[in-house]
Length: 428
Ligand code: GAF
Image (cartoon, rainbow, N blue to C red; front, side):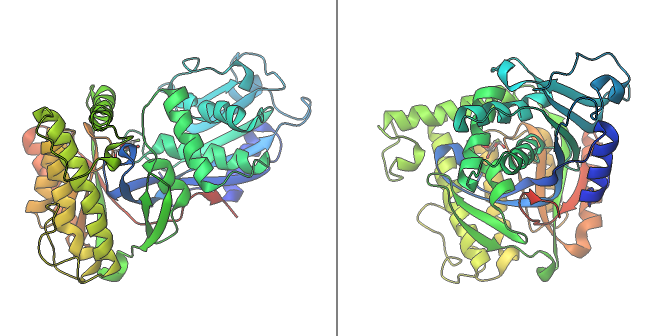
């Protein structure tokens, strides 16, 4: 996979080959790594993701008269349903087991939750939600998609796909959506159409983050602050350790965690855990509820402590704060956040119980081999961990993690460095 990704020229050329006419524009939307603030987004809390240097790229065109555009049959050499003028056609660079490009088509009119499954449900959900939100019925477009975000690694490839399709349609259909509206629209696409009860961190990271920054986002009011995040300046690398496992209960486990938080908030008469007083008496809650709440409260505090360290604030780094967040060396920028990353992992593993043996092994092996900090990222039950490491320790730490996996008989992990790249936009 070419990590740098395609150029507008190469995307446009491929689009023209596939569809027989020139696209209107090319767009990219990155995947994300959440530095800290896990399972806080749907609790109206705080998150601190970066947009990574891997993205979904889209070339989009409005289909001309049928005589000029190629039919689906021409494109695939297979008998596909006849192309209707109002159809949205999508072709991906990903291929199925028999080597055929993934592709599909649908009309906005026929869309409803459950009608489409798999990867196509993500762009379809966006089209459906555009109609519901703006009244614009998207018709007669072709899209070509190329992605450098690994699928299934927990780097938010499907949210990046939704964002790429949305920003392309926003521009060519003249929707004029704000960034916040785009975040909430893609969340509704995911929740209502795809059927996954996710929060907003992934879309916000892709849409709102500036190059070389982490996005400090308040998920309650969507206010943001860009936090400089320059790994190279500190001689550091951020490794993604893709465990390449996805445990079967990942979807149900996520939904159960979310419902537990909502139930607890309701017990306190609050809209979300954000509105529950952190000094409230939790003793009437079950042990499980108490652990989930403890994670959310302490994780929000860790996000703030991380931002303080990245800001170079000297007064936040000394001593332990009231919410149990262990203080770290003051004022030493990115290097100082290691303890907070590890504390986040411990909390996700022990209190929120969304880790798994592979993620725990990745974090432990990375730390034993000298990582500055490490934690699982994303929803959990598989996917990836991150490790913050000295640039000259990348090889040793990667080898140590790989060896630890081999010793335990786990599938070999995929380990690679990411950096803080730009948010979504049109490709020049
Ligand atoms: C997944 C979800 F999509 C996010 O909204 C977020 O809740 C995350 O899990 C956990 O922090 O990536």
